[in-house]
Length: 462
Ligand SMILES: NC(=O)c1ccc[n+]([C@@H]2O[C@H](COP(=O)([O-])OP(=O)(O)OC[C@H]3O[C@@H](n4cnc5c(N)ncnc54)[C@H](O)[C@@H]3O)[C@@H](O)[C@H]2O)c1
Ligand SMILES: [Fe+2]
Image (cartoon, rainbow, N blue to C red; front, side, top):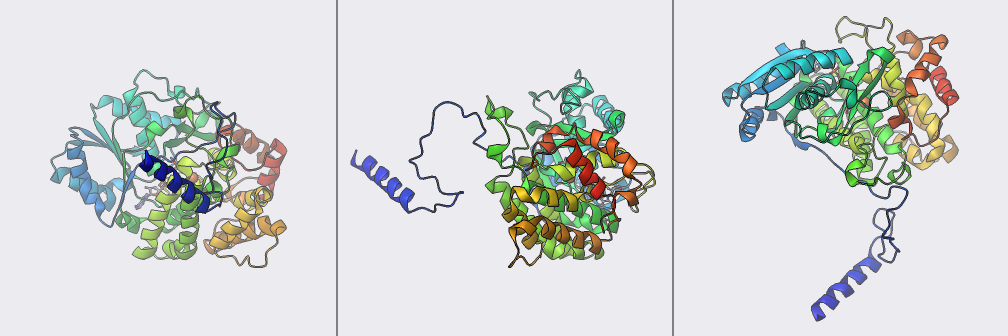
């Protein structure tokens, strides 16, 4: 009994002497009700197992043997299939005696039809595991193929996010998936999200559930050495916006109601002290290595750092979420007219990172009043001098900092340069409004008029 008392005394002493900052400041004397609070009061961090190292792809074959895999579906795209990242994976599988079939028809910036083609391929094989080698397009396609392979009778829209689809929760166990990113951008290797362009509405939407998260993310910086300049540039801005949006997203305590069952807590929960750590790391890494990595393909230090930052930002967004830049990017990419970017093939597409960053200067001017200090901190982590900055100027300071990066990376001068005019704005707003999951994470309420203004302000940016 006396030792029990000593434990309580010790706990009380630690409690009183402990740090009282918001992250550590729980004093133990707060009255905690037994009934479930109306607003959410908790967050959780979920993440794929992450393995990082130069050349670590060589271990994948052994991982599949450890999983007792007998028939593996390897997914990639038609460009990567003849490049080193895929060769390294197939070598490792062959060396370890693992049977596989390769699907190389993944579409860059996938659509519902391209997802369905991959799903059909998966359903025709008797696969017990999946390996995705590629950028976000490949990893997302592989997640969808795995899901509908495991639930062959499901209608495609069953699992697609509401209101576009039925937003059904995934209750079945998917096959193990290993994700091997070859771009430094999306972070899809650790997220429970897969995104596609739903052709019918000319906007992107997706499927979002923890069950989609790959079992293992193999982060091998060697794969970044073949990434062309524009892919490295645009996917770098995806990291950039993931970090900025998850850092400034509505706090998890203000997102909405507490779920009746913890399994129903959404993947995108709002900013929280843990995802803030990932975001800060990424912003500092971007400051040091972003420009270097884009313009020096053989700068292994810069490219390795960006590759790790992409995964870190992925863990951040996979739990905190993203908001307006992504919400507006989905119709910007979905309504593409004739813009054909260099290094992405011959079809008109607006690469995800480019679509996302286009509205960033306007978005952060708009969101700054919600939390000027955090916006100033973000600008400072990206290299701005904020020593004498006024809180009222936080939006302008962060926006100017973003524009400096966009200018250094020769980003096109606004939506006009991508083929849009003022007359397209109503359609773009119409495409953004169904992105409910993202818009509600924006730290300021926004009307359709606000969205129009943000898009108008992004028609020309310099
Ligand atoms: N699931 C998520 O959490 C999430 C997050 C952000 C973005 N996304 C999605 O990811 C997609 C974009 O993915 P991305 O930016 O990684 O690009 P990507 O997968 O579309 O690839 C872009 C181009 O780069 C080429 N490429 C990729 N790696 C290469 C390498 N190592 N060497 C040479 N060429 C290489 C590809 O063949 C392709 O032509 C979009 O559809 C976007 O919506 C998903
Ligand atoms: Fe993104």
